Image (cartoon, rainbow, N blue to C red):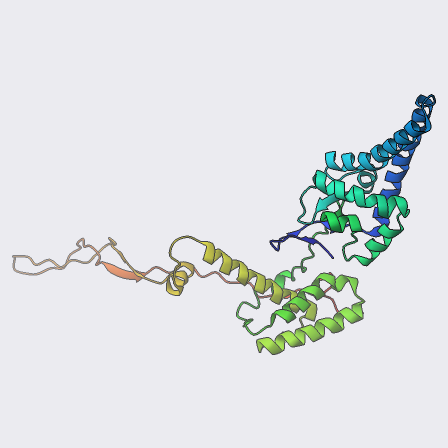
Length: 332
């Protein structure tokens, strides 16, 4: 089992302990407990040398119960499931729901441990742990507890597909990706995250097969001259960009602009702009004398309407660099 699930169907990040680690922790606990019991027994033997046999037997039974049974129960209760052996092995006793144990849990475990650990030298506990799906012994079953690992190795960082070459970013903006199934997307992502670990020839053949499947579902063949791995990376990047834009638009507050307003924001529409200009004009004057003459005059130019257009910038030619050697190049 990979994790602990509570009664509310909540998956906890707890890993059940395996038998070797539990056995090592039990050996450490037994060595410590038997060493303490030996010293206590020697001290009681010296202290009760003048007593009768019945008193000596009563003191021996009391020391056995206190040291070998009561001491582990007290340690697990006070430490919330961490004995010396479990602390050394990175283990801990918890309830079935993942919570810390209490005195009643430790008491049931300790009482059953006398039979399955002390009297049988751990044979019953080992057999029960091997049979149980989560490695629980009989004391754990009756107490409703579980031994888990506290020191879990750090999870690896999630592997992400490599970015496509810069000259392929945005080249598939008009590609229809609605017909691509999720299983194919998953296969492509898994391939892109592990393609550098594969043999070059195997990686190239897998990329060609996946690119063919993707082109069949999109209805558009892959561009000629583009490595299949680079084509897959570019299409996955385009899908991620669309999902990011969709999430941003859905999370943005207020009304969402329609297609017309978005187009106007991106490409301004030519509108007539009125402008007034002044300049030299030609005036005609009529005299009251015997003749008419044409002379210089000053005039105001008529109001004109013109269209204000942005300057046209010549775009450089689309130069396609060679494929990068980072896993997109064909095998030699």
